[in-house]
Length: 124
Image 1 (cartoon, rainbow, N blue to C red):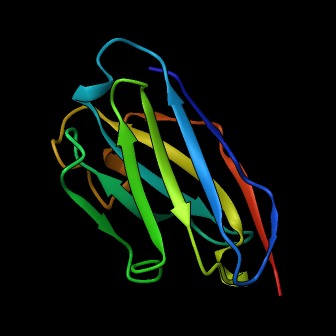
Image 2 (image 1 turned 90 degrees about the vertical axis):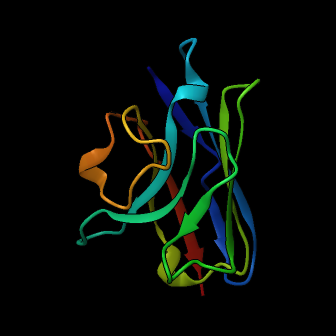
Image 3 (image 1 turned 45 degrees about the horizontal axis):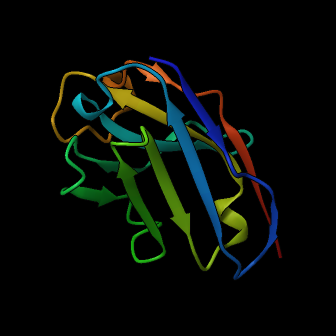
């Protein structure tokens, strides 16, 4: 599986962005997907995850109510809609695929494949 994240850019606080992650491979619907982020000088942290079917989603408390994860299995895409962005959302955002768990995980150690990351910068 290869993952390609895109959509990151510079945005003002309060603005919105949609990140996209394109996946290769024929069994995309068999993978739970997650988004993680890593800010400068900090460890990578969980942002959101979505189950294989797309029915179950869950979020880090820091983004709940502002971010929405979704997927389109026919297009082999996963998205992260980010609204009401804050400077503390500035980070490199990564998409990841979990081949073992139906609902994914909050732990980055559980994910098997990673995209290259896309930089989101939120200015105050």
